[in-house]
Every structure is written in C-alpha cells, then in structure tokens.
Amino acid sequence: MNISSATLANTQRTIDSYEGCADDYSRIVDQFPWPSLEAALRQVATAAGKGGQILEIGSGAGTDATRRFLELQAARGKKGELLNVITDDLGGPYDAVVALCVLIHVPRDQTGPVLEKIVAALRPGGVFLVSMRDGDGETSGAYHMSYWRRDDFALCIKQAGLALEWDAHRVNRDGDGWHTFYARRPK
Image (cartoon, rainbow, N blue to C red):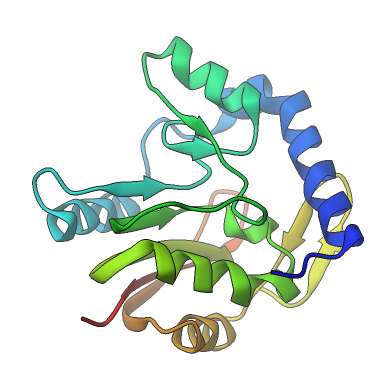
C-alpha cells in the first residue's frame, strides 16, 4: 500500500491529539451505545457465533492506535492491542470486524485500501460493521476527519468486495449525522 508522507503526518497528528485528550474524551463518550448500535453489535456477535473471532478497531477495548485509550481500558479490566488501521497488518481471519466512529480518521484516498485490508482479514461469510460521519470532503486540523454521503461510502464497500446487507442513519446529540453499514464478505 502506497501511503504518502502527508497521510502519515495527518494520521500521526490525529493519534497525538487523541493521546492528549483521551482522559477528557473518555469522560464525555456515552458508556453504552445508542440502542440501534447495540442491536447492530448483537447482530455481529450472532453472526460471529460462539467462540468467533472479532476484530474491534479503534475502541481501546479491542485495538486502538492511541496508547492512552488502551491504558484507560486496561484500568477498566479490558485488554486491547496497539493497531493503526492505515499502516499495520490486520491479521485474521476474523468472523467479524467492527469499526465504529474510527474510519472517519482515514483519509479518503486511503479508504479503499483500508477497506480492502478489512475484507482480506475477514473469513468468507464474515461481517463488517462500520459507522461514518455524514457529509462531504475532509478536514485536517488536530484531527483528520473524512465525511461520506451514504451512497458514496456504500459504493466504497461494494468496490472493496463486500455485500451491503443494511445501513441506517442517525443524528447524535451534537446534531451530527452518522451512517452505519453492515456488510458481509461473500462466501
């Protein structure tokens, strides 16, 4: 995968920003997911089956690129591993991959390659749950943010080799729109 120095710098700036605000961020994030996300996570668990292998990207309780989030989760008794979805191998095969509120930090030009890595990490028939911010373009301040319209990201999922099974839209307490997608790697 060809990753430009600008992409690497933006990615590191985002990671560094989260390192600096992880404690505050952890306090403001809802302890429990929205009911619709909770239902989606239950669907992932059912699809993975008892003993299934699930890669959770960007949660701190699964994998995260930010050491401080991993430390906070460890203090809660949860184990996580350091993983940068842009630069690292994802391992696998997994029965499911979950990436909620994290691929928004992947630059648009790296979204296709990252999705292809996720597909390669899934077993045939494995499922992928992802949420993306609604909007257009990207910003590069302290946090690199990519915004996607529903149809555009659905096309990215399809081009990566996944079959979209359903998607949903919600608006969070700050008025931001989010798209959630549930897709499967064909058998």
